[in-house]
Amino acid sequence: MIFSSRTWRAIALVLRIALGAVFAYAAWLKLRVSWVFFAGAIGDYKVLPDWAVAPLARTLPWVELLLGALLIVGLFKRTVSTAISLLLAGFFILLIRAFALHMDISCGCFGPPETTFPGGRCCGTARCWRSRWW
Image (cartoon, rainbow, N blue to C red; front, side):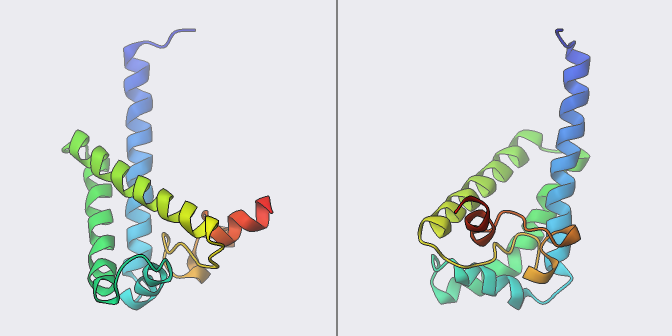
């Protein structure tokens, strides 16, 4: 069965809003607690110098919230999609690195570890991957 262009537009709209909602929700979870928790998660990756961790922990949740809101509203779709793709690619590379180095860290993507994901499930941390695959 071949979908019409109207069907594809509807699917794209639903997926765009869903991805924007995920980014906005992740940002909200980080913003409702102290930035220090997120700074700890960023610092655990041991990629950035210490002086860069705090500014990133303070600004990244706001960037995620802005990108999520713009994606939901549908403004600057290509630019926002590119920015989100770059964020996700960078995060995925960092998770692969953490997994390969057997780092026991929380990803920090949905706030502190105790609020990682609704229902207490993990969201893809290296620890969760190792427990499932090894």
